[in-house]
Image (tube, rainbow, N blue to C red):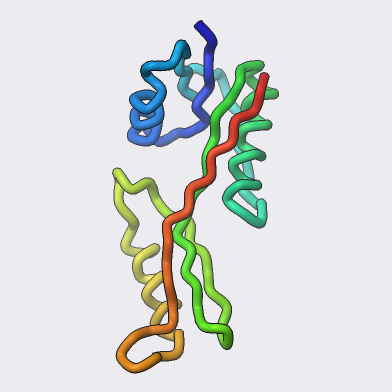
Amino acid sequence: MTDLLVATTNPGKFSEVQAFLEKLPLQIVSLKALISPPHVIEDGRTFAENALKKARTFARFSGLPTLADDSGLEVDASTERRGFTLRVMPVSRGMTRLTIRSCLANWRTFPKIGALRASFARLRCAFRKQPA
């Protein structure tokens, strides 16, 4: 059986990934099993870049193949105004009041088209796997 490190500190997300992969011949390893794992600064331009950075960092540190993710709420706007991206707390824990207020404050500045704001939103999640 092959070990696979799941690079998340969120117990809910870890359990979901573990359940998703349960039928594969993998031993799922938590970051909790590592002694003093590094802190990864998520400064990539995309969720995919951040997920890859985390996967590479933890794979190098642990010597294990690693699965990592990054996610957030992306809000588009009209062509006259740029959209914005918010870091999102894991869905199982819910968004914080501060995050919700920030999202609404940005969204309210978008131009109206009739009774609607000119924006669309989606939760984007990127997963990346890095070999050991």
